[in-house]
Image (cartoon, rainbow, N blue to C red):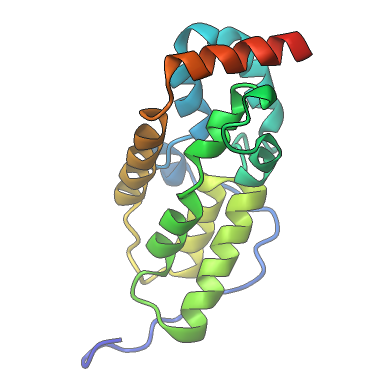
Length: 173
């Protein structure tokens, strides 16, 4: 709200199950696919386990990853997927609430965080766009921010740790 700007009207209705918009699907990357692309050789073994985490909408909600902890190699390679999304709540909340203040900002941030936990990135982005139709939220910027964070996260994974995680995971199956 600047000097010459009117107050933005928000649609903060309870979202329930969010139907992902097609234009959001094309711009917001899928963390599960990104992780599987990173894994490479072990993709065939890991893909059914990543797919089992997906919701009805096809996306991996970050809440489904908490059980794998951080750098707990006994939990297998999905611990690294959990590590990848550690900053996503902040990234999504800042993107969705940019330009808002006070209770509006808090309401948008908390709802986006909850949807991200329960339904995934694309659902949270779709809700934010519907909730803030005048905001002109930039999906390309969001997609680039998420991908950049994930790439930074996977760059810290050592091959040895990934091999150990796969071995411990296979022996536990």
